[in-house]
Length: 113
DNA sequence: TAAGTGACGGAGG
DNA sequence: GCCTCCGCCACTT
Image 1 (cartoon, rainbow, N blue to C red):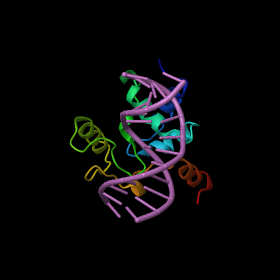
Image 2 (cartoon, helix red, strand yellow):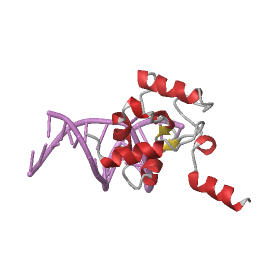
Image 3 (tube, rainbow, N blue to C red):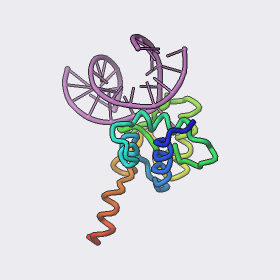
Image 4 (cartoon, rainbow, N blue to C red):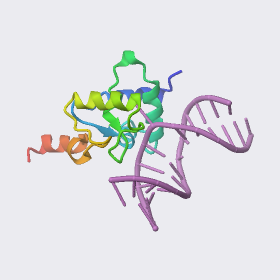
């Protein structure tokens, strides 16, 4: 059965906007589970398709897809990301350009530069 | 109950 | 940028 923490994780992942990505540690942190990055991976693996969780927008802190390059899962995630205009090169993504930064975004929006 | 495993992260070489 | 080690924690054997 689903651990209540998993639901928090799924909720958080659904907040990631199209065209952006987040790392496992970041999702764990935002979900109120600091240091539980591995739990995020497990939660995504258990996420039911009926929940429409954008699992493909979550990658590791190195900016890379966490599946072996060439594997079925890898190709699927890569395809989904590219369909959202996220550039994937050799299983790698430019974090500086595509990583979701909710805090910074809020600040920029609130402070009006 | 203990040991192994993994869609991870960070520090070091 | 790549690899190794170690810490981490839920789950499986």
